[in-house]
Length: 117
Image: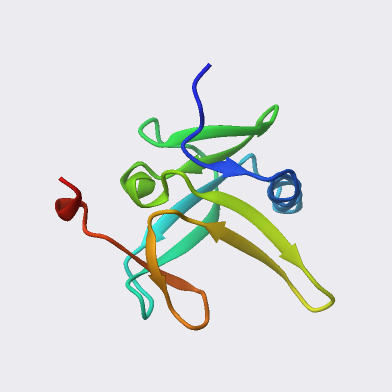
């Protein structure tokens, strides 16, 4: 048995399954885009097909979260959780690779991979 490169709390898993059912889809993809005031931002979208190069995490039978292969180095070890209050539900990314975040918490910076080697 291999360990997934990210972990998903039970609450986040239920959130993802509900999102998939609401959109009549079977898969989500998590990407890191180069944007935001700290340089990177998380992007979650529904998708019809998972690229064979992407990492596939089963949420429940026939429901998946894919991790974009080129984003994996920035996401490795991340725990995804959900925080809810009376006004909103937000995904929380506890990313050990994040060196800093912006004030709004929507973007993050990571150490250059060249500096690690």
